[in-house]
Length: 188
Image (tube, rainbow, N blue to C red; front, side, top):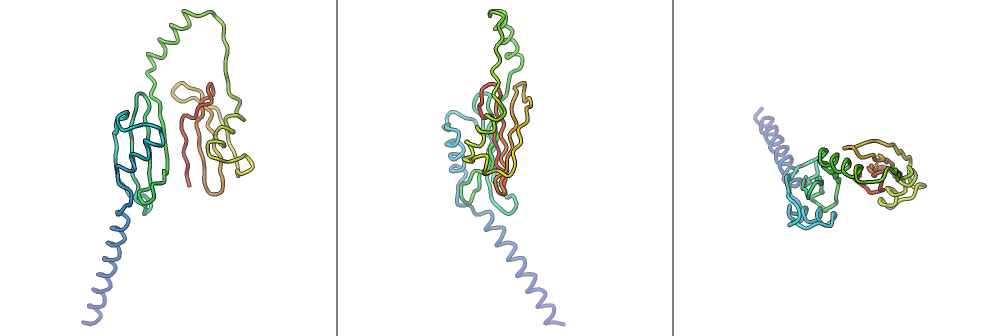
């Protein structure tokens, strides 16, 4: 009876130590918060003096330590997830905040001053797919599937482009009028 109790206590102690050691190793990161911030800024071509950080959080997701960063410059907000162990950028989201009232006034003023000619520049959906594929470094032949849908986000028409290469899914928002990439995500 005494040996059994000691054995159980020893087993529980070993289990607790193993769990503790695993938790500590998951929290240990080779990348500092400042390095993660600099990676995100470098990826956007920005400097620390140009932006304002609103979120700087170290978190564990699925057993991996990562930094969650949110910063903004002007009307654009950037959200990054960076792997703390190797500096890999796990996801990027960009959102352009639009002052609707100012935008409507600018359009109205422009219409009042201009001649009544209308030209619409519209990017073909195949071009939007090619823009996303080129950005990701792939050709259409590399993909398992592709989806291109037109949608409006904050009053701007965008193509939502999705494709899969292997086990990785890529999602892009591309502005129809200009072909600019507004947002992209890589999910593996």
